[in-house]
Every structure is written in structure tokens, then in C-alpha cells.
Length: 193
Image (cartoon, rainbow, N blue to C red; front, side):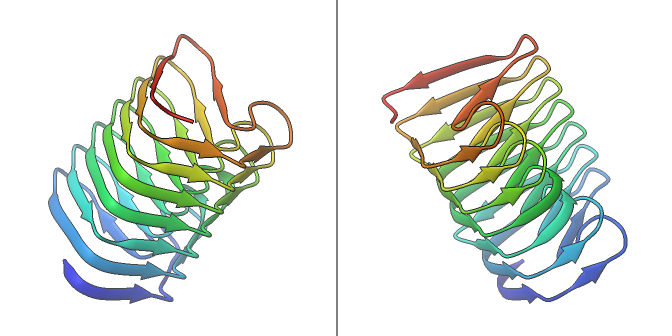
């Protein structure tokens, strides 16, 4: 998928804008994903079931979902997000910008996650259930969680490395304005603000 605009779509199931499942291999490049809606998972993009996805030079904006309003990633999937923006996405439960779960492997390289909102946990990103996430040269700012982890919520044996990145001006109405880590999870922060 390249040089596209995917906007104002509605799904009663997962994937308001794009649904990717069942061991699929997908490259998304120079795509604008805007104002898509689902009451389920993945307002902008839904990725599940051992799929592999590259998101490059793309904007994921103003999508809404129950979980993972920008991107929802689960079930042993691998996702690389490069030179992209996730902004102003809204989740009613968890993962305002990105939801990552169930042994998924995710890399963020030069990604801007800004002004996403969730009524639950992980305003910018929620990471759980043995997932591994590398965040490099990225910015996570001005995201809001009504409960925990304004910038990032990490739990349930997950591993996160943050290198040369900025996490600022995020808000949680309970715990962890920037980052909340618990349940045997590991985080390394190097050369970051």
C-alpha cells in the first residue's frame, strides 16, 4: 500500500482503516490514515495473528477505537514503524496511539507520537504480555491517559528499550505521567530526555 489516503471509514469489527491478519506481510508507505472509526480494536490499523508490517513515512491521525486507536498490534506480530507520525487518536479503553500485546515485536524509528488520548491506560503506547519494543530517535509527547501511563504503560513481562528519544508533557490522571512499568517488565532508557 503506497501513496494513498485512507480516511473516514467505519468498521463494526477490528480495523477501522486497515485490517491485517492471518500471517500477512504488508508494507504501508506514504499513506495518510485519518478519521477512521471502530468500536473494537485498531482505529487506523489492526495487525494480528503472526503478521509482519512495515509502516514508513506515514501519518496516522484522528482515528478512534475501543483499543489501540492509531495501531493495534497483537498475537506474535512484528511491526516496524519508521519516519511516521501518530497524532490525535482517541481510545475509549487502552492505547491511545498504539496498543502492543501478546508476544509482539515492535520497532519505532524516528516516530512522533503526539496528543493521543485514552480513557484507560497508555495514552501514547500500551505494551503488555511478553512483548518486546525498541524505541529509537522518537518523541512521545502531550499524550493523556485517564488512568495510568500518560506516555507509555508497560506490563506483564514486556521488555522496552528507549534510545535517543524524548518523552515529555504527557499526563496520567493516576500513576505514571511519563511511563509506568510493572508486572516483571524491563525497561532500559539510554541518552533520552
